[in-house]
Image (cartoon, rainbow, N blue to C red; front, top):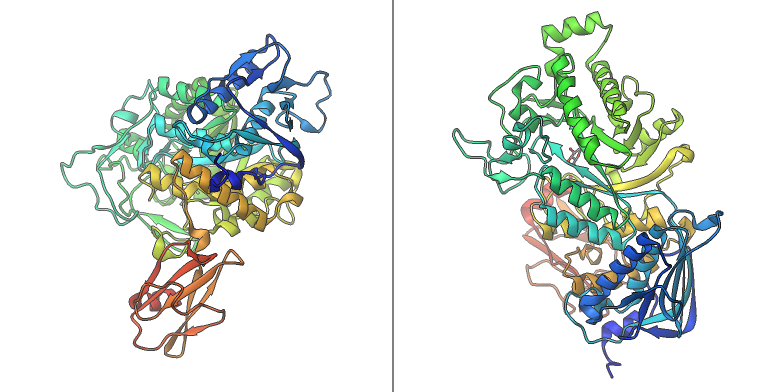
Length: 621
Ligand code: TNX
C-alpha cells in the first residue's frame, strides 16, 4: 500500500490543463492493469494510431504494453461518433466517461480522440510522465467530461535561427506541446543569425548561411566575426529531416507552418548570396548576435544591410525557388513570409531604387515593401498556399488575401480584422515568451517582462476587434538568448500553459487561482518527465523608486498566499528575517544589497532575489 505517497494523494484531485468545457466528478475509479485493453473500431487506421500512441505513452512508467482490440469490452475504449452532425464537439472535441468498469472516449475525429487521450494522461498519477517503471496504482478517477476548443489556431512559435535546435529537440518540443492540446507549430526557419532549411536549388543557403561564429553572451553585445574566424556554430534540417518532423507533428495533431522571414531579417541569406541585397556587400557574414542596428522608440536604423533588394527580378526568382521547395515539403495551408522590422534606408538611398520607385509610382520605402510583399503573395499563391505575415504587411496596403499575425500589441489584429483579413494574435506585449517572467536579477536580461499572471490574463479579443476574423493565437519564443533546451523549456513553461488555456478553454472557465493549483500539478509532472520550468510565480515583483535621495522598494506577488522575507544586510533571507507586509520599504542610505525570497506554507518556494546597490539607481528609472 502506498497511501502516503504525496504525488498519488495529490492526483486524487482532478486537474486538467487546459481546463475542460465541462467536467463532473463521479464516484469510483478505474484502475489500469495488465488486463486493460484499448478498444478501437474496426478498419479505422487513424484511430488505431491514436491507440498505439496511448499504449506507447503508458508503457514506460507502467511497464505495461496494452493491447489494442476491435472487440467490444471494458478497458479504455476509443470510439468515433456516427452520423454527420458534429454538434458542439466539432473537429477537435471529445467526451470522456470513466467509471469502475472502464474509460470511454468519444469524438467525431481521431484528433478529438487524441485530445481525450491527453486528458486521460493528466487524470493518471503524475508518475505517468516518467520514462522509467514507476511503482504506482494507475487510477483514473470517475469523471464525465465534454470538451472542445475555443479557437482553432493554438500555437507556439519556435525560432531556430538565433539558436539551432536539432531535429530530436524539435520533436521533444512537439511532444510537450501535444500534452496541452496545442495544434500549430510556427517554425521560424530563417533570420539574420542562420538559415536552417535545405533548399536544394540554393545550396549556399545552408553551406554558408547555416553557420556563424560561436558566441556566448548577451544578444546585441556579442563580438563580431573576427577576420578568418571559422563559423562553427549552427546547423540546418535536410528536406528529409523536415519531412520526418512534419510527420511526427502530424501524428500529434500539430500542423507545422514554416516561416521564411523576408525582406528584412535576411542577413544569413545575404551572407550566402550577396547579390540579393541592394548594396551587394560581399563582406556580410551570418550575424552571431553582434549589434548592427540602432534601436529607438519603435524605430531602428540598420548599419548592415539585412534586407533583400525589392527592385531586382533576381530576388523574386530566388524567392520562387525557395517557396516552391518549401510548398512541396509542408502540407500546411499557410506559409509565413515574415515582413517584420525591415529597414528601408539602403533602398531609399540607392539611385537605382529611386528610379525604380519613380517609374512604378512608389512613393516611399514603406510602399516599396508593400510592393515586395504583394509580389511574394503572388509567388506563394502560385504554389497554392495562403500567405501570412507579421503585422507590418498592413503598411502601405496589404495583399488581398494575406492573413496577419499581430505582434506589435493588438493594434495590427484590430486593423486587419476590420479589413476582413484573417488574424492570428501573438502580441509581444503579453505573449512573447522570450521576455523575462520574474525579477530581472533572476533572469537572462531582456527588454521586457511578461509574468505568468499577465500571460494568463491576456484577452485575445480586445475591444474593437472583429472576432469573426480571429482564428486564434500563439506565443512566440525568440531564441536570441536561449541557447539550450534547458532554457527553452524554462522560458516556455509554465507560461505556455496559460497560453493553451486561453486558446482552448471557454473564457468563463478561466480562473487564476484554480489555474495555479493545476500549474503546480504540472510541475510534478514536468519533474517526472525531466522537463525544466520556471518557478518565477513564487517570486515577488520588486519595484524600486527614488524619493528624494532615498530608494524605496515595493513588492507585489502573483499568488495571494505568498509570503516574502527580506534582508537589507546581505543575510540570506528566511522565515526568521523580516516579513514583508506591504507598502514601501525605505532603504537606509548605506544598504548595499537587498535580498528577498518567496515562502509558502512555511517553506521557501521561489528564487533567491539579490539586488545590488548599483542597480537601485538603474531600476528606479
Ligand atoms: C521582434 S516579433 C522580432 C524578432 C525578435 C523579437 C524579440 C518580430 C516579428 N520580430 O525578430 O526576435 O522581437 O522579442
